[in-house]
Image 1 (tube, one colour):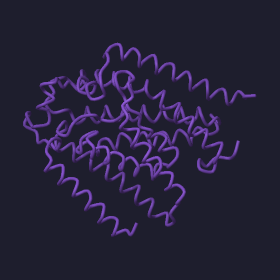
Image 2 (image 1 turned 30 degrees about the vertical axis):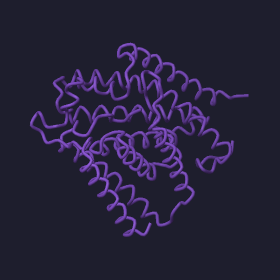
Image 3 (image 1 turned 90 degrees about the vertical axis):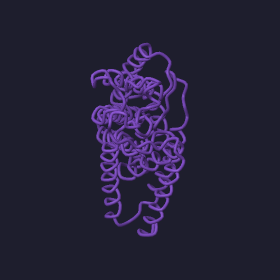
Length: 93
Length: 216
């Protein structure tokens, strides 16, 4: 037989769950069916046209565009591997 | 769940470096704590390895709910591995995720901070509510809600502070858009809370010592 103490936790859990599900359904009705990145882009205010140019410093700020650049991607991956190897040997993990 | 799904270049280089630096400071503190302990808790390290593999795999699974979402299991990481090893787990997960194109490299620092908040808050709520909520399922579930909610708040904060390059919307409009994401994310948190609750209850029944609990 479940005591009041055990039930208190479950009641609280299901109460929070019900509120969160209701909020999620309302938000979903407002946004419509969108994928993860699609929803993120529309929330951040990136239109499909802007998405292609976002991050390429069009506002004059410095940008870091690695995606779609195999050379930069490879360099970064090599740096990470070398860094991990150095830490591994230094600390004798 | 709370994870910044923007490409490299969304944040300016300054903010990329700021979030990376903050994340590295947190990781550095975790490593310092681990080394200052002297002995290695091999059991806890094994759990951390298992949750790393599981959470990384789940990160990549797109669940066709509310248009598409993925689970994090970071609160479960916090509950099982603790905040110190948990911070290393989220770093590994985010680096591996970036390596396969899930989130940009430049956003790894920001995403580590988001996930770190989830790990820390879930761990703190799970440990702190022991006397108020003795039932493991509901305690782990509520800790998951709390962790994921804080992770979402950190995510919004990071995006609003950094600003997204090439966006003409006002911060208020971005905040409104991101609030809808948080609402959807928290709906999915219900699934994550149930999964985490069931796993924690199972472990609590089979091996309560792994949770630092007495057998019920």
